[in-house]
Length: 120
Image (cartoon, rainbow, N blue to C red; front, side, top):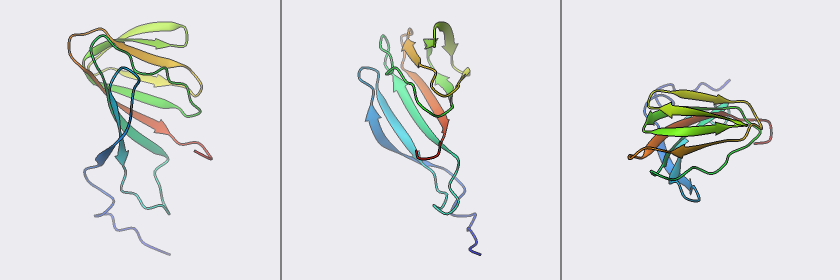
């Protein structure tokens, strides 16, 4: 049985550019240090939305959580809207459309945690 070295799989996580929203800003994906033989059941991304813009409408197979690090915006989730501010968290069930529009003067910064599904 192989043993994972906890000193190489614990600590700060680095990010790489993943893609850009159509109008909102960049998305960076975390490079989690866990071995392929024991991967995490989730992934992490951080992203920003420029003032007066939105991220792309998102709908997918996985559950997701957004943690708003800074800024303010109006979240549209399914057919409801909510104002989110720094420190707020939003959770999305799979296949529920969600999008946020930055209503503030500063960039909206957020972190996403999403669960991987079989085949993802």
